[in-house]
Amino acid sequence: MSVFGNGLDKAVQKAFTRPAPQSAGAQMRYLVRQLKGTRPVAELLGVSQRQVERYVAGQAKKPRPDLAARLEAEVKRRWQPQVRARARVRAATTDGIVIDTRARIGYTAPVGTTDDARLRHLTVALPPQYAARLFDAQERGATDQQLQNIAAEGLKQVYFQDGGRRAGNLEEVRFTDIEHLEFDL
Image 1 (cartoon, one colour):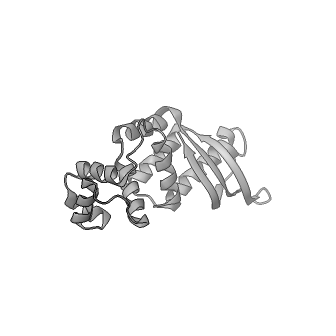
Image 2 (cartoon, one colour; image 1 turned 135 degrees about the vertical axis):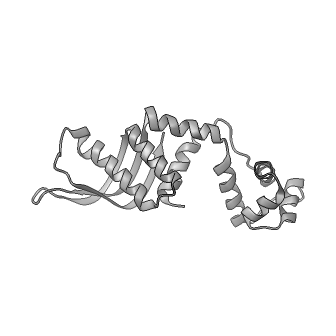
């Protein structure tokens, strides 16, 4: 998954009201309940059905690192879907989303007024319409570049143009070389 997609998922996960299952057995049991059987879980995780049954029964306890990572990711992706949906709706309608990034950011403007891209650390609250666009694009399976373009447009509007009060002739914001990216609702 992409840097932006992971960042958006982590922001929504902060809204969880209960912690997701931690042990491998509890995670397997949760997935078995969600997918209604051990066979779909085995196919999802790329292991044998018997191995899934061992975790559910408590005979196997410590998965190898790659399986543990896949298991945790699949559980978190399915954990508390209603809480996740409410958090997305709230961000997209009233609260907006906060982006904290350290990246090379600059803009293009008419000749003679351009500011070359430079490394900047920005923490900017984007309005709800940008949160809605980011979440909608993520659900449609947008690429990391498409999500990055939406975020760059939001930074242009909020940070560089200050909601239309300055830099009205700004054409494009370049948002590259991302060192750090985090979202918060």
